[in-house]
Length: 368
Ligand code: ADP
Image (tube, rainbow, N blue to C red; front, side, top):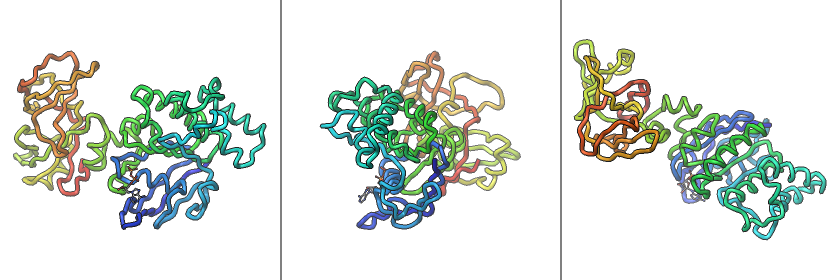
């Protein structure tokens, strides 16, 4: 059992590319930590530095109580599962799982015990004599995971392990890996570009962009309180709608205003919004906070918009609205599937403020 600590870790590739920029991250013992971000943000590089497959340009990495900067990968007590499985095609499932243990001179009896136990955990007992080409994608992925399990490592590292699977198998393997984490009670670090995997699997999520950590927290804390507009747009599907507008002051009230909306800001936001009076600000609201249920009265807060596209999802419907957002996405409302609306219709869509925020227009950091 071991935690992993990264202190001021940087990676500069040959040619001067700064792929990882002063990362500080503490992954606790037995935690499931997901590194997530768009392609090229430095998550694989970070994982590979933890594994020892990539040299660290500066900073320190500690696994358990040991600094591992100069420890070769095989002595780090980690096991890594790759996207492409990296199975030996000419070996059976059994031999693929046993291979690493044989190299390390484990006894035949110990190897057999470990391989059979891993196969049982993964439901692969009946496939031990097959070669990888006679397995489905999901089964191959299980063998790759099995090969990691038999080592009984202190830390499991996963690099986009599900991206070669079809959508249904991805969802199934997602829950299997989560169950595995509960069963093995081992530290796991998991890299993905898929925010749904991050949300559903992580005890905590580390969101990265351009080699820099944007936020580290539990999935729900990140969803409810994203540190900046990048995180707000990256975590959650559909993403948070972020609008640019101005704060206007009317006596005792503050109003967010642009062409599509004029919204009185909640009293609790006043202190944070007051410095922006008569200036620009960003207002973010989750798609589920924009409804179609009509409300009346003085407190009526609406977006005035035309419906451009309707996407029925079954349990709910996404409405794509003709309101520009900061992220370049179309403004999306997530509404009751049984509400009848038509493309081309112009509506006043009422807002709730349970998951709405203000952001600074320059730094894009959250204000409230
Ligand atoms: P991610 O896993 O988030 O997609 P990577 O860690 O693979 O990102 O890459 C981070 C950045 O470093 C990218 O801009 C990528 O092009 C660059 N990079 C990755 N590997 C190398 C390499 N071997 N040499 C030079 N640049 C690299």
